[in-house]
Length: 218
DNA sequence: GCGACAG
DNA sequence: ATCTTGTCGC
Image 1 (cartoon, rainbow, N blue to C red):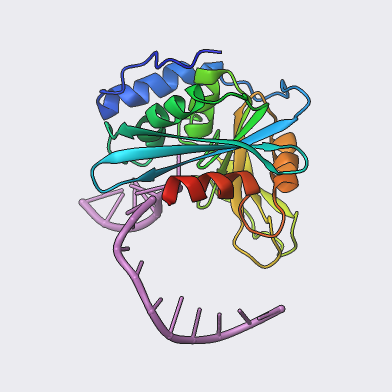
Image 2: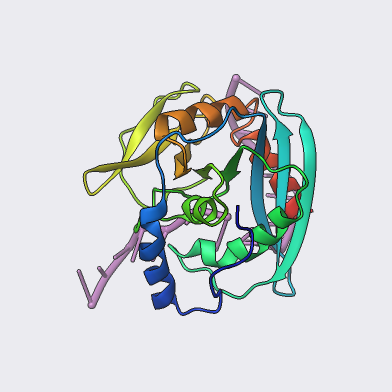
């Protein structure tokens, strides 16, 4: 896989959107992942001095015990623009992955995957750049419509945009706000939903995401 | 023109 | 994302 940044991060928002359209055709939404022994969670936090702090937590699967954690800091070189989140967070994330000893078989990203205006959210961008299977697990909606989701854990509804199923709104815990799941790279939506549920124990967010979030924040 | 808008 | 205490509910 290629962990070096092949794209300029100092780009205009217009150029960023072009890059998304150019790379979106490289996204694979079929199950092309190995037997999962290690799952990773990744998240990015921001410090006051304009620094992004990316954290990656690699957990054993299906035990979900922590195997390895890494952190990387990078100066923020792109503003937060809805639809262009990956350009703000990926540089730090790539730096963090470069430090990993154990590459995971699957990565759960904190943000959308295919459920994106140009079908190229953070999880897709990350997956295409690294070649690693990835899933987008967002805490809130970017685009798409959906029917009410039953309150029972495990139930879900299709997330639809322009008559296309772009993801799923999944209840990872009964009676709690659902999460938005979508393919990032090398994994289908049904399989993505299975893995997300397999990574959720007693909280709304996957243990992978929780572990990474904990590192990226404090 | 008027909202909506991952983190 | 980040700023922040108490509070409602199982």
